[in-house]
Image (cartoon, rainbow, N blue to C red; front, side):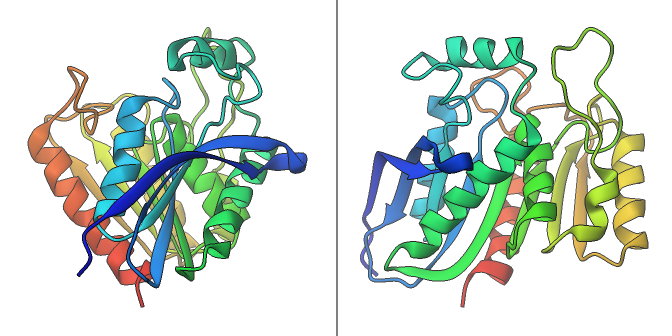
Length: 247
């Protein structure tokens, strides 16, 4: 197997036809390959998220991470762009759906694509991954500790988002959820409530909750990192996408 990849910054058409910056990592073999839209966390379109995209490419997937803050702060550092987005209440749901839909279309149009696209998101991106999977035709989704799929942000938090449990009836694909038992947003009770709704709607899903892990346990550059939970989580991600995105 030819073991090589390419990673580069690209532009693609997002919501309302806006040109969105994105980071594309892909294997250089002939394919066909499944594809993944990687949704970054609230801290933004940063180096650790780009590393996740490259990790997917190393595993044989084309991965595209859209810069969801392109409009708020074009060319700004991840920290400044995230601050600008937070000041405006975060990414509007309608715009998010348009941007992720554009990213999925770009991936499907690539010559080596097998036509199957999944989505994965972390933190705020976890909620957005569920939102995208309830709004777009996708083949698989992963929610890594996405807050406010169930429940509202606490008073004083700048995010202007609401719960999306009512959209679960429209979930287009199997959903994998990875959560920390010590997390507050989402709390274990909120995770249970979401799983109950998935069962009620007859949706294919699989949830794993890790004891001793809180929010952001995948983040290798943060104190919240929990190696055992993250390693097991990656195992489930590869199994999930291998099941639904490969031929």
